[in-house]
Image (cartoon, rainbow, N blue to C red; front, side, top):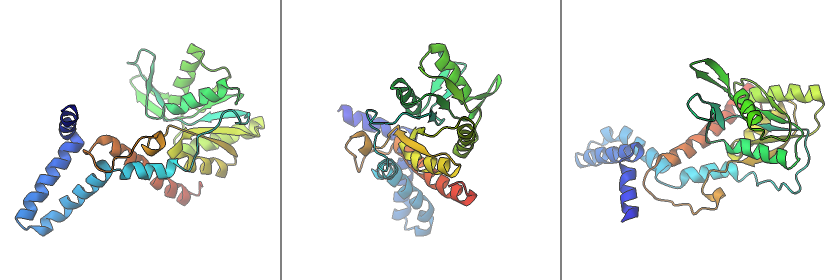
Length: 258
């Protein structure tokens, strides 16, 4: 009964509700034999079903994540710096800690773990910017302040300031590597983002040791993939992440960044 009620509640959430509405529309069009009127909503129904009600999104995301095996810290080399890409936190005036955790927060904690294990001599933070009531704030600056206030990092922390994208982070890190003579740099980011991230960093002139984290697909979290279930927004987010990487890869290739 609990499982049934949970499934019923899922159908009342936006993704499930839209799926039901498209299904009802499709049934009406089929019964009235209005085949042309069925094309657009039918295509939308099929796309929504595949991306939100099947295991397709998890499989697509896993195809990116499975390229990067989890690191073994016991044999991980000591690096001159640990680069943590942004996307995990943002400054917040409403949170008691002044920081809002987001989906990629694993990136920061993976970087901190490397630092605490003595695998990096410097922690370098990337990230974008956020428009707040007090003006534009840097994600990296806010996280740096938070780490220093709580004394969470055993090594010095440096911020890259406001970065437009991963390429901007790569260019700034490349300049730091030349300035300080870094020979080995650890790159921490989500596993699904690592292929594009490493490629753009190396194209910018920085050779990196990959540290994938933030595995999201069911398969990479050792969970059973359900190939048919109630439509849900989580699957849509996984599909969006996969598509973002696909579009981002080709956009970076067109720009000559990878």
